[in-house]
Image (cartoon, rainbow, N blue to C red; front, side, top):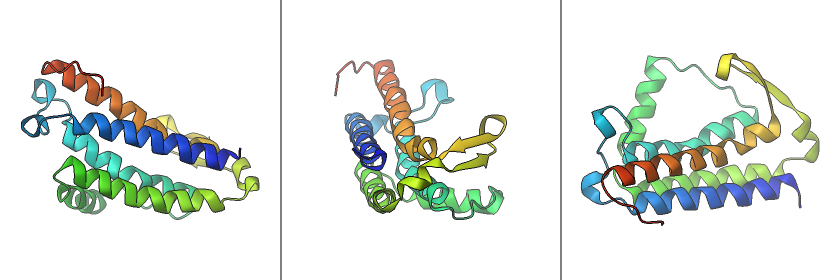
Length: 158
């Protein structure tokens, strides 16, 4: 199995799992924040929906752009329109399909590429690591969502 096929499969499974947990959250708890300081499940679902776009930019080699006030405002305005878990999941899936098409067509030689990114103090990230970012992000958020669920008394294993 090519790495590209493996990462597509594992990313889809991680997204499905994260949105399965998010779908288990009652509507009255979607915007609830632990201690009024954490992130809500809806906020996390909105981020997960947008995440494939960031990976697409990295892997395609497109210019990252600056995270200035204007771009952050545009990002916040876009995700603010996604007000349900179902909408977030649909937006995510649409973006994953575009990302997966890129991954499928990625030549094996490109897996050897690296790109310097400013995250974690800045370092070179390998192509496989950049491709795996959405899977990691979905897995991270499923843990966060499950934790929020336990805080309001839901101990179900979705």
